[in-house]
Image (tube, rainbow, N blue to C red; front, side, top):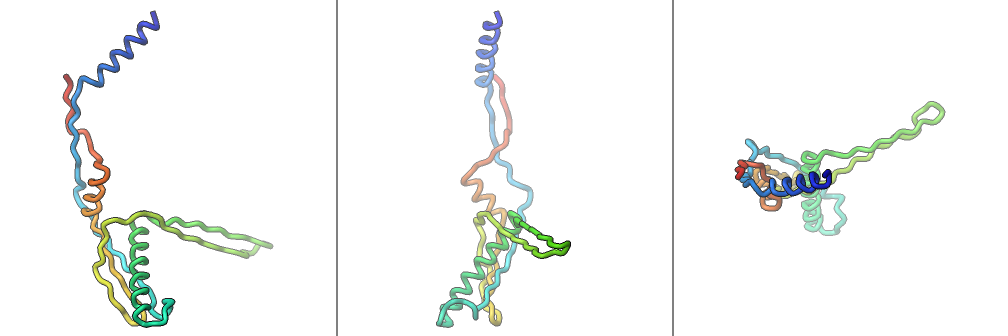
Length: 148
């Protein structure tokens, strides 16, 4: 008898998932923030002999530094710290920081030299980030369920 009841419940629950229509919709956030980041790179310490090569290398380095700053704003920064004590005195203290993430949709606002440094300004508009994410993932919510 128990076996018959279990089989009957399984059959009925299998049919229950086929008696409805779910309508989905994608909801956009009410507002989208814009993040800005600035990266700096020294011209003099770039490993090149020609001044023009140092400028190009500093441009790229400042852009990477700005992307790192954006990643810190979006994903946060991972910190690891350790301290050593010997004879009741602090003998070693170290802190390590790292950032990991993917930044899509950022654009270079300005890139220019300032004295002995090169500066790159980036902007990340989350409306564009949201649009890029929608193209890849299509997250949706239930709009309406109709039962038959």
